[in-house]
Image 1 (cartoon, one colour):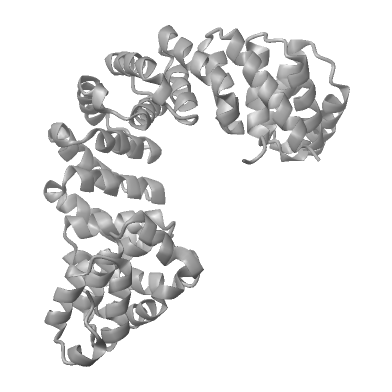
Image 2 (tube, helix red, strand yellow):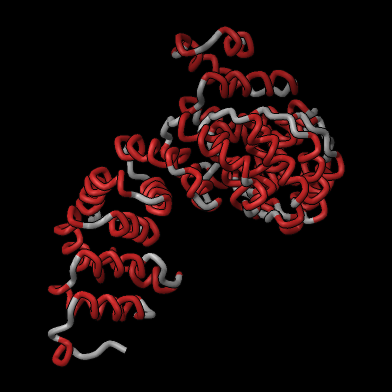
Length: 348
Length: 87
């Protein structure tokens, strides 16, 4: 519980940090800032943002409402003090901003954070690097100078990265569209060595990142393929679809992996959402891997659910089946009827 | 949910033509929509569209007129393969 302003006037930054660290909810953090914001130092600000970046989804919605007006005072103070933030403060503030995804009025703070991050990049530890890269990529910030500065730091410290840190950082560089071959090579070598420590989602996302970035890493992909094939039962539908997409798009043949994905995906086809189904079919068609049982399973399930498909899902499903040369009369009838209906309905 | 974009329309027409699925109502709906929005197609999309309708032997005079006019207008953007498919 937050104490009233009258009896806590003389709290030191250290005491304040204790209160901020133990606050459980967003409204408590904002109350602390309302009462003691004038006394917040850079560590208090960093801790406060770090906590705000980890609030529950419901509280995030509350903070996002009204264009983030509840955070106005904290944002303005952080903007003023951004250049004094330490490495952890810069990365956790950026992480929180990306997580909160408040659209308007944050430009100035982002610019200040970018400057601060550039100044501190040599002090970033692997987690700071991963969080900062993830934050700027997620927020869609175009910051090539910052990514260029982070790439060699990440490559240099690659052995200290967690699997999640490697996956998120690779994802961030790929999403930001930054060409950083030395960075990706360093990740590939390290990740291949430690591939068993990667969770399914980390394997899928890292494969996705290398392919999206257009980086060829055959030895690493072979390691992913072997590991993923072995643990395919632990993969979510989206992990399966993304992994197949990555190998197909990269043009890397991995027959054992595709066979394992085909069997698993056919078994769990009902768990695949309208985007995972076409993506998986698209990957098998593009890779030229024949998987009749999987296509039959997708056809039956997709035909039943065409109403949930987006236009792109419908078109990609038809494209995949045609390209794979897999006959699916009932599915094509369902897609034809649904597409004709929607094209007509949408036309003015 | 957004409407079909030109690439979705072209991919769908291509898929149904390739597999020989006769779907009269579908091709009619796509022809009308594509003719109306022909300016949004890229050269490959126009070429795939023309190829799909030609392959099915379906009459879509308004669509072909629109593609012809658009192609003549933008011929400089087309590569030889697209032109060959459109012809």
